[in-house]
Length: 124
Image 1 (tube, rainbow, N blue to C red):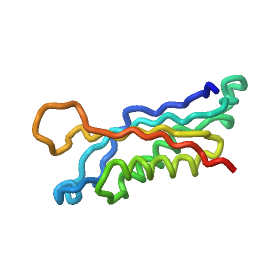
Image 2 (image 1 turned 180 degrees about the vertical axis):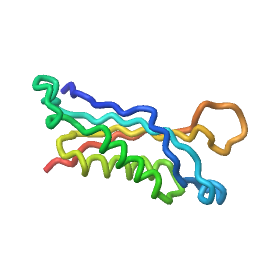
Image 3 (image 1 turned 45 degrees about the vertical axis):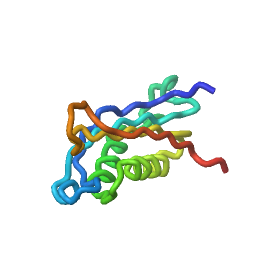
């Protein structure tokens, strides 16, 4: 089944996730992309704000997760973001989350290191 998606891309957020002491102490910027999937978005037909996702609320939720997380791995951070977004948006059938570390402490040139996950709402 093809699903409609609402995208929030390129969220630059400060957090303290990483295995090195400096990452935990000083923090770093992360870039987060989200795709919330719906069987259909009623607002596509109605043009009504109350039939879609409040992007500002989702942004604030993700910002708060990243700001308060104290994990070693960005994999765990992505999982927490996915769980919190699905809990906050009960009409979303699934969410895809990408977390990137543009300044990962790895020698060499790269644009970012990251992880992408996709989680579906559990069937009732």
